[in-house]
Image (cartoon, rainbow, N blue to C red):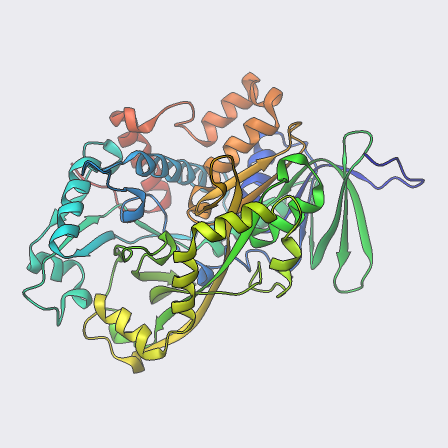
Length: 503
């Protein structure tokens, strides 16, 4: 650890790096738990939620495993593993509870425009996939978390659920679908900005936009020295912090490496850019009212799961299809092409090489995606919307995601497609790496982080009571308590203005 300087920067309890959904959630949660905490926030852009949390940079799916088929893999014996689906469904219920708490506690219009009811559908083609979907439905509906999910092979019913997908489809094709009416579309950009509005109104909270964190040093007294550059003036701003959270999306890995903590050793990142086809024809947009997820092609990564999504963004209905992947060495949409090479260090070069060798199919997939022509993208759309016409769609660039690469004793290095929280042994610094289903499960992830990094406070009766107030299901396993699921959903649906599933 470095020695003290002649001039000591001001001390803050918490520094949050990045003004996205993760920092917003953690900041508000901590201020609810202890209103006396001082919080300093640094964001390199001039507005909150402009990267991964922005509405146009993600699918806006309230990831609850209602429609995402990759969360329910088929085991070798043909049975369906629903363990991940149960976990993600419960995590999203925690998110809804926290959002409902905010709406109930604060009379703020900004946070009441972010979530809307949109049915979640899964749609599959081919006899083998139809059988998979049938078994999936049977397995999921044994849990109260998936109560109300409908399954059909009736083409007329599917035409009612998703006319654009059924019109012009070969009548001899074997198809099936499931539908969950409790599904949501979430504008995480709007939600994040609303949460930052609440944060900035609280005493002891300071937000510095257009400031990029350049240095992180663990000082002799256990505090962290954080230095950020004002991108407008070039001046440096230094603060000391008792706790630092790095929630900078794709920018988290380079900052984690700068921290020098042993726990960061071996982590790498693989950037993947995203693209959408965005519908420009209002008549077509008006005819689709669902998020419809398909099944990734054999050998394709989870990020390739095709979906035709209804979105509600800033009061306007939108329709997207994708994702189409691309490759860029940037870690952020507004980042640098040197981000990937600069992240390679002695400690992570072997895991990155090993993960790369074991994921050649991903490399092949990305090459194919980058080489796609407009006709190729239209052909992919027509698998799900047979009568799609090119003039009705335009290509739009989505967000940049960085998949986690980490050390593995057996494999040498593995590529992860989820989220990963890296925490120092003393709990003084933590970073969030990875992508989907990150934003949807932000509350659960931050809840776990708070308990790990603030263990003594979290164990007090005061904090335990506040946990239960913010998240009434805290301490319970919803998958095992059907009556509690019904109670929680009735309350959150009423407060968030969502449909309540019957019977």
